[in-house]
Length: 345
Image 1 (cartoon, one colour):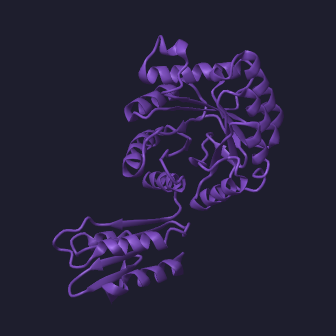
Image 2 (tube, helix red, strand yellow):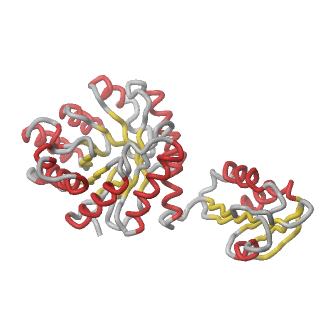
Image 3 (cartoon, rainbow, N blue to C red):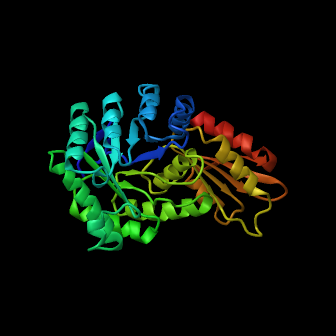
């Protein structure tokens, strides 16, 4: 088990539930837009939100955000150690930076001192494009990522700082998986999982699901981010689906639907899509099966809280907790299922 690191009210590692993270993509200097996006991420189920801070003007803008969110906030810093210190002092819940990129041991010591006095952790973030040059001269691929991260952690340990989370992201799924496997065997720091620069839409979701899912299935990983181009709310939705698929998140509605074949005598896809959209707000664990015919329908219905099993002539059987309760018109299916879902949730 990894050591526990507290980020605001969220615990990472130490046996705590796997947390979901995302990152704002609004201009950080636009306090109103950034706060609005953070609140949207919270509503989607994001546990921790990261904000890029690139100037002292942006530090000032963040003062208008600190204390107005439920989710803990992480300041993402590149190169300028003074920004890390300022963000620690104004109330961010964690600092994300790479100690090897800020220009010397003295500057690392100052950042560590700021995080110590404010009681906040540091995430060491190493990507394929930000490797320690001394490491990349001796290692390659996954080994280089892991070694670079451990070297960065050692720079913090040198100053008596151990409140650390580590990530070793790569845009290559195999490299990412292998790097985390190496790291998992060499340290007890909690690990932040992600496939960096995974892309947009289906491609990004698939790459992230494979990389993150493969590691979580092995018990590796304590917090995750699905990195997608575009609206970060979609990152949270994808991450929650990954966790629910592995039974690491017992909240929300799971909809099971068959792929359909010639035995299906009604248009199932619009029903499933409408249910997914209109049940997204429910937090209680609920399983709904939408099936096309009697081949697998009754079996899935027996294992679901609510089930629809299609038949002939525009009719379908509606099940509640494994028992058939009535026959309905397929055209009524969405409203009938929604009514039952609200009733038992």
